[in-house]
Length: 481
Image (cartoon, rainbow, N blue to C red):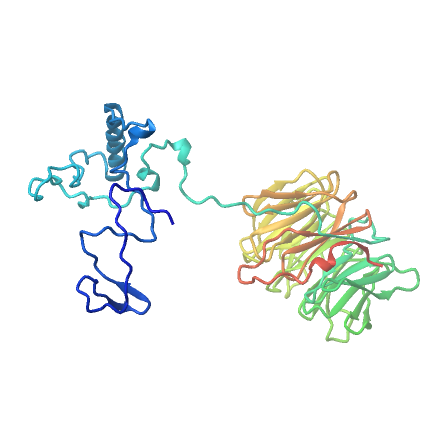
């Protein structure tokens, strides 16, 4: 190792570990094992393994680099910057603070003539908290720092494309039917012509549940709340009850004269709406095909939904009417006649008791909100196209609507402002069918283009961090039969 340049160089005497009694040898004390500490004589030059350059004795004239004294302009610039920095850090009233003087800048001597600051820099002030940008040496205007200091909420990104597409041959293009439903056991039921198929979302397995006989067609499907039994409405006016876990039909219930286009479950009670304008209440535990008959609609019943508390049943018909029923009357307790087209889209809010949403057909195109507790019409939203289905999010105050003529789009709304979160397109026919996954994050839509499309639209529950069972193995396009 090269020694640093110096005017006087003196070689270092080697250290002899056996010369402890030599008075010229510095004494050592082992403070920490492996480390030696001693105090050398002040008259000796110290050499170590650290190279710390010193230019106090260098002769820069030999290199043609004379040291120029500091100009007054440099000192003025330094003083100005120091003043600006002091003002930014300690406020505008800190001008009387004097810079602390180092021994090099003060009067040399025994220290008695050194200057002292006139005041304490860290003095108390009334306002102790300052904005972060106020501590910067330069000023920031409102445009640079932003008008609002609150954290900006990043909007949720909704994928614009479906994560899976299923081909569904013979899926009917009929506004008054309900041919798709998603069970609590994560199984999708689809009515295709005279057959019912089950698609298991966890593994993508497709199973044919049944084939109807005598030129009968499937007109509606509906899962029981536990997800083990499936009700199938037929074009002949019958309702079949199937045990999906064993693939067996348990019973057939009659009572309607025409096709059954709407089904809705409430515990062990099953409601069916028909083209014969009636609604039949069925108790699957009883031997009778139905226990009561609800009359009021003047045309086909195409929409049917029980409230989350199972106290009220909402029905919509081709007579442009929306009725609300309870368990104790065969006549509607509430009648809403504001829609100007068929009411198929019906959805109860899971977040607010008595909040009901309904959508009208091509001549109406509106989504209306009702408070059935106070019998109040809350609001109306013109969507610009036929409203085919509605479903509320289980995890957020949002809802999805599917549409037909003329845009065939899917819209995600934020309630109650009814601002559009996302608009999804891809179907080439009316989006007539809609169902929501059991975890409340995914929806499936069906259309007359004979496809089922799966979308990730709703946020996950705050209390859950687990991913949905529908994973990467379900991606792609396959056929449901």
